[in-house]
Length: 161
Image 1 (cartoon, rainbow, N blue to C red):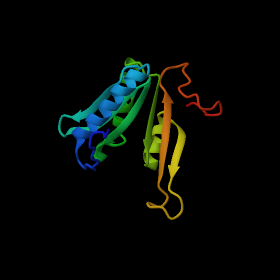
Image 2: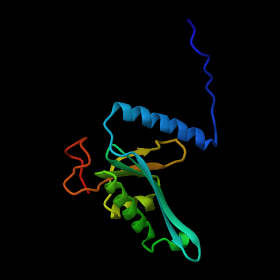
Image 3: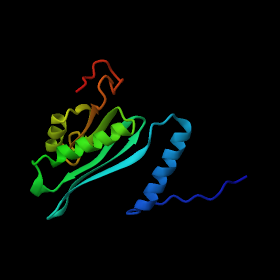
């Protein structure tokens, strides 16, 4: 007996479809695995004169905060807004039951910023010789949010921040 006809097609710029797919996956995972609170976190920084000057987005899952994006307007970088946004999202994550956070970045400046905030590398993807863009790296970083929680169990040699 033949099953239903299924078509597979690429979709560009369809955020509602991406949200539907992600939502269905998270629902399936929640049915299979014990969960902490899964939620999105969005925090903004606003100026009385300029409006939006920064923001951070993330999501919580399995006791971890994933920091998805951090943006600070170039005119106010270096004023502590990024540090305050990261502190705020980490506080929200702890209130939602997270013990640790992770993120990734391709920016050497952002990597140094996150290191100053206590994030440590746990992996890197690098483009090999002849791969474009040349010398591109994507660093994966983590941080323990709750004192006394290791936040990482892959190796006893993995240094904690």
